[in-house]
Amino acid sequence: MEQKLFDSELKVMEQLWQNGDLTAGALAKRLAAETGWNRNTTYTVIKKLIDKKAIERQEPGFLCRALISKSEVQQQEAKSLLEKLFDGSPSLLFSAFLGSQKDPLPPEEVDRLRALVDQLQ
Image (tube, rainbow, N blue to C red; front, side, top):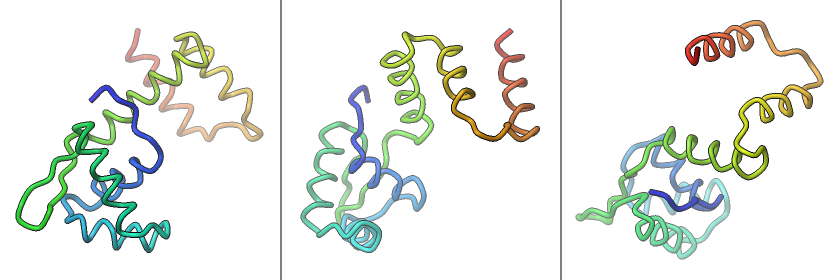
């Protein structure tokens, strides 16, 4: 899946990632409670996700199953952000992030970041 997922599509995907396969009706009920969407809105977003091959529809009951994982989408979004705003430079992204922090990072976060950098070397 190479197409970008929009915020509305991510709301549907998040339900599937958290809860596993759900019928379109169950998705509509959950999203009505969470976002106030009506059934038609949810079904429209489901159709778009099917067209993008992010989910598949199975019978019986219009069962929706995610075809892409949350980590795949996170990687795509991170790569897009990196290219769009930071000229593909992870260090510029990291520098911008750290420059925006009002409080120091907790020691466990620093340790995780060090471990990630160590893995790259």
